[in-house]
Amino acid sequence: MMDMQQYIESGILEEYALGVLSADERTEVERVAQQEPAVARELVAIVSGLDAYAAAHAVAPPDALRERTLQAWENAIRETGPAVAPSAPVTVAAVATPAPRMAVAPAEPVTATAMPASDGGAVVRQMPAAASAGRTRWLVAASIALLLISGLGNYLLYNRLRKTESSLELAQAEQSRYAATQQAALNERDQQLAILRNQAFRSVELKGTPKAPDALARVYYNATTKAVYVDVRNLPELPEGKQYQLWALDNGQPVDAGMLNTATATGDSIQQMKNIASAQAFAMTVEDIGGKPAPTMSTLTVIGNI
Image 1 (tube, helix red, strand yellow):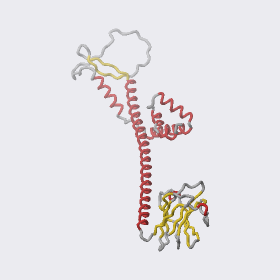
Image 2 (cartoon, rainbow, N blue to C red; image 1 turned 45 degrees about the vertical axis):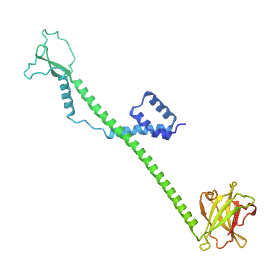
Image 3 (cartoon, rainbow, N blue to C red; image 1 turned 180 degrees about the horizontal axis):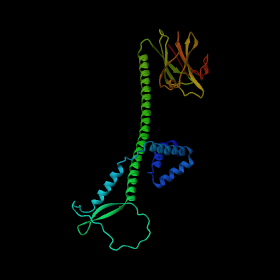
Image 4 (cartoon, rainbow, N blue to C red; image 1 turned 60 degrees about the vertical axis):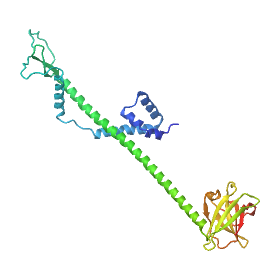
């Protein structure tokens, strides 16, 4: 299924408005616009924006443009034949016999341009003034069209540049988040390494019970600061809705030492648990999520003495 937002951002609607698509592509855009209201609204907004841009940036031709255009046109006509000497006589062909008088419409204004004649003289070639004016209007229209196309090209370029900048900002933000995550992981690893090397922490091996003979975990206990850390080596996968709970055994009485999070239970990290004032052993049971005030002995998984 076509992603309409991606289709809108592809630039094809702007190209449709500029008239640079092929007939098949234009037909496809119109079909999509008829089926997708969001595309139709975007297309209307683009066309309106281009019209507004053209109106805002319309430039009136200078007053001298007409004269410059006429002069350039006359120069181009002169270049089609040999140059005329300054002293060459200019003759005008005349009608030898008067024609019968008849009613005629007023003649169209003309402009005269000297052209060489076959006998060495020159004849006057008459050019309609309307053609000159039409030529001027065409040049003015062409200038405005070029200005409009240039403006539309700048609009499309700016639009694409804005999208590129947005993509770059997203990439930079993602890179920053990744770097922050990596830094946090490195800090955590450094902290864990410091705990493992700290002589004040005593390592307590927790071995599996007959219920889980391959289970293995380790507790690091600092009797001075009362800090407790747990490092899982291998624990059975938990059933749905269950969580491992660590217990400190003080004179035979179980003391809640906290719940293991998922990363700790799978052996991906070392987790700091609740501080324990005094303990001679540690054990771990499977409890409902959130834990219980007393251990469920039937789910005892690992246990070890200090």
